[in-house]
Image (cartoon, rainbow, N blue to C red):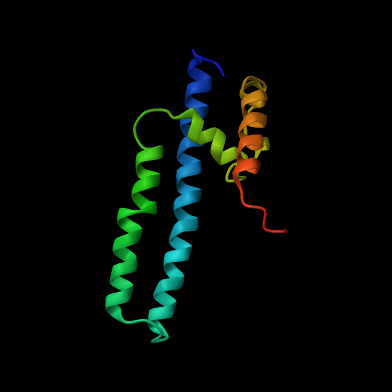
Length: 119
């Protein structure tokens, strides 16, 4: 992985970091939305819903905030690519060339860490 990024690469990486954050937050909010639907169908109480919102705020939402806000975090970008939050085709040719070995490494580690659901 490159230690010194060009200005263009840094700008692109920051854009990718923001994109990954937005997409992961949207996915997490969709899950939370299902909890609201469950509440509206009277399957859970307002207290249970409030607890789920609280857990979301202190859990996944905070995790994403810490991961993606602030400093450039290339490892989280690579992880986002490995788990298909960002498609490799969304990277410029230049940046893809610099990161392709790291992307492959993250994919290998991610697939090894995922539980085998087919077994």
